Image 1 (cartoon, helix red, strand yellow):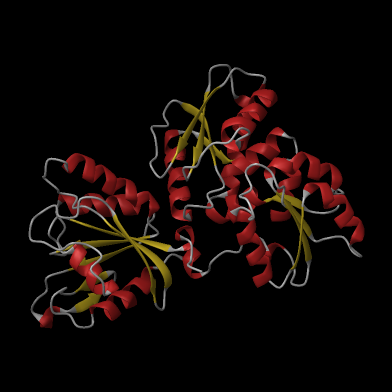
Image 2: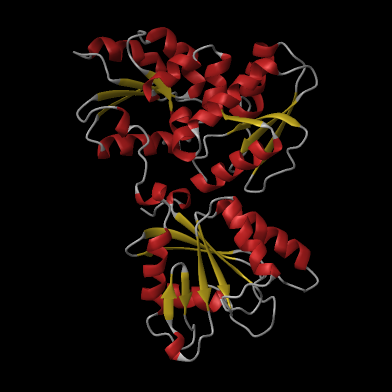
Length: 389
């Protein structure tokens, strides 16, 4: 089974037109991923390529259009290129000189602003005597450097972010090995037929890797499950939509949290999300709330982001709120919003979520996520967060 894109290291390839971005990528992947041409602006949209890049592991390359594109569609292409930055765990600036011009400086400044580590690849060093490495700079030639792939990977390893090298666990680090964990998985309209949703699958795998004992039940069988166990479970994890019912069944002395809150920690900033939830009680009539989803999907009759959370917010606040939804990788103008509620982000990588948190912070807009917002509205957030303290 292939590694999900959301779990891959996202490597963005940036630079000016004709700097050799596509040539470098084709050499590294040993495939014709991107079209190579002397005509400026050949790469028009972002080209994605997923592969295994040993010893790093599963990665997702993002080959972007030139930042100095002067074609008729240059504005749209450059906008797409800049939006991709928010998805990058690591960036690569392909250039013909270590002396950056304004275009390349703007890229480096953006990466520094978002704390994205980047590698500078000085291409077209066709005199092989010039091939060398200097800190985060790799001097190479896509045409003549026979060791390009090896040298690129060696340089890339040096700048990998710590949270990728030391991949965080979903739940396995919260309890001891051999502990029993009950996972409450409602089978409702949002559960795909014959399957369970992705965060639940990933959590089960994480617990198996952590040598824990997983006990998967529906909320209607939870009481029986607790009674059947010889000793209480070390942790109960529930789908957020069953939070109220599960909290009433699980004794207070047993730690309880949700899949969405676990993913708030895995994919974002748990403390920032918890802080953002406090904005719910401060909302006033007419305030705008943005419900932000990472992926697009067909909304169902009782959709969590379009029906359940809006209903909870209005019931909790008693206010006439303006609630809007937005899906996909793009990030809308958030200036007019008082609160953003982000989904569990199971279909996107951590860098994109962290970038959104940072952008929200700069705009002074509170941000939280589905599970934390739901538990706050139900009055059980303190209990749901105890396991992390």
